[in-house]
Amino acid sequence: MSSTTHVVSLSNIQKTFVTRHFFQLDEDTHKRQIYRKRVVNAAMNVSFGIRRGEIFGLLGPNGAGKTTTVKMISGLVKPDGGVVEVEGMDVERWRHRILQRVGVVLEGTRTSIWPLTPLENLAYYGNLKNVTGKRLFERSHELLDFIGLKDQKNVQVRYLSRGQKQKLAICIALIADPQVLLLDEPTTGLDVQSSRSIKDKIIQMTREQGKSVLVTTHDMHVAQELCDRVGIINHGELVACKTTEELLTLFSDQQFEFRVDREPAAGRFQEIRGVREVSTTLSADGAVLTVRLVREPDKRSAALYEIVSTLHGDGYRLLGVNQHQESLESVFLQLTGPGPKR
Figure 1 (cartoon, rainbow, N blue to C red):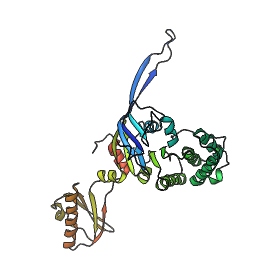
Figure 2 (figure 1 turned 90 degrees about the horizontal axis):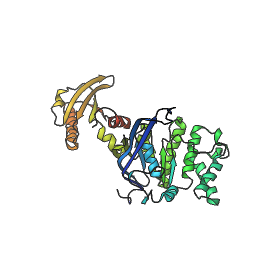
Figure 3 (figure 1 turned 90 degrees about the vertical axis):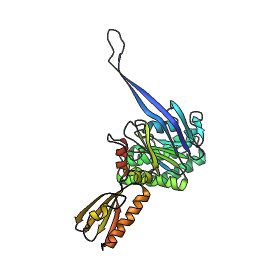
Figure 4 (figure 1 turned 180 degrees about the vertical axis):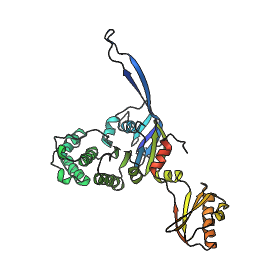
């Protein structure tokens, strides 16, 4: 995968973990005997890229390999095979440089130091990343103002809400002004207002500052709202990687609803080429003709025109047309659930 078109590039990444569980210490031999060994494939030939100014969503069930992938991009975990590049640099070869170019917020980690204030936290982490002096002072105030912590700059972190702590974690990740931001479950456990605020800031960073953002999340509504493209990982395998719109279109049933002023005869539409199923229902607002069409674009288009023409020719008044649209949650379940995959 060309690194010239992607700020972050993963090519055929592989990562396996082996877990072992032991009996209690044997009092006679003073040894522990292995009784279960488990091999977990966290990444199996995973390849994708993230463009400049793009929000890429990495979705998957618990244990699918999302957090491991984030850690491999940031250099915290070494892949068993394949290449991870950030701005054209191999993460394994240039790990120290990569640390200056990547900001990471991992789920469940307490990034900030609670007895310190947000300003003191940023001073501490800024010095660790060689951000010092006037630049550190200006950057710290700029970030806290941007994220919405202007009035909490000098309040000890222990007194901040969970949402405010999460905002501070994002500021810490951004202190060195990295091009790439990796956010592992950034809105988990937050109230509606805090979640909304963080989502708005993520969008603003990508659109106005050109940041490249990777978001992992279990919340399909967050992914559908935020992400330009989505990769779905299951048991370490990338099973889909497309724009959000493409995924929704690909998995949406080609089902259209025509609301008309009176009940039409279903048989009039069943013989139209490209029509698979037809049904009608009555409601207080009128009648609804529901038609399921084939997936081929040309045949589907021709069928739609003929349906409208037939309704018009038979004297029906067309009140509205809707297409049934899948949600990202439904697509996710189809790709990762136990049922058959499309």
